[in-house]
Image 1: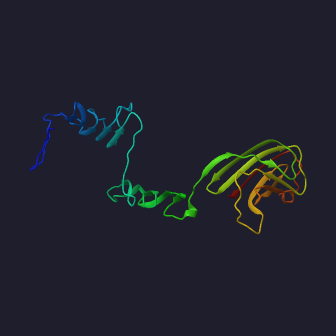
Image 2: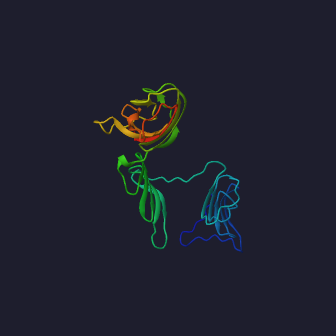
Image 3: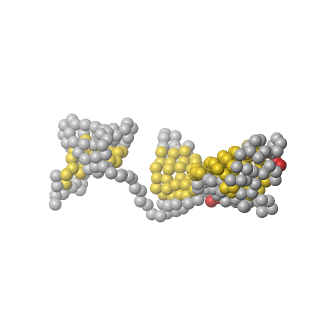
Length: 261
């Protein structure tokens, strides 16, 4: 084993001459290169990439240089990343500063409550935890936005309809709010009383125990009208509530509505 040691003064490694490099090797392999021509450090490479001050290399990515304003480049021929390890009561993250504020922006993970938090202008803006996404300084579990999805649903004929022959149903769900719309062709329907269909993509939440109405539906057929979404997960079209006269027994209907699940 060979040792290079200075116990009393600073240790200087000097590759004398303009543009010369300082190279640290082990068994013929380059471990560290201090590139004199571009004042950069390469770890695991003899040729640090341009632009970056520090280049950590573990395999060729296929890109020859770093982008402008890059101080640190981490390169590999496969997956790569940066890991922060802390005790389970600490935080780890990134802080962004300027002359007026050394942490005006930050993004960190708090292990104490397992939350990822994002700050801009030194103010909390987004928090992601087990409840979902929360905004600003809100920590209430009920306010977590935990779902967004789009998809298809299939309306099914019930009271007042004949047979559905062509059905298209779409929905968007944001948190617990569901927006549904559909187009239906059918062979026959009643002209008074009610028409009822099922097949809603999510069950309505029972917020009004004294009422069967949990959401609103608007439809147009031969005329415009409205109905409601019931606690029984059905759409009820009450024909007497048409906006302009009675709804006729046409063979198509389009509708859209919103409810809470």
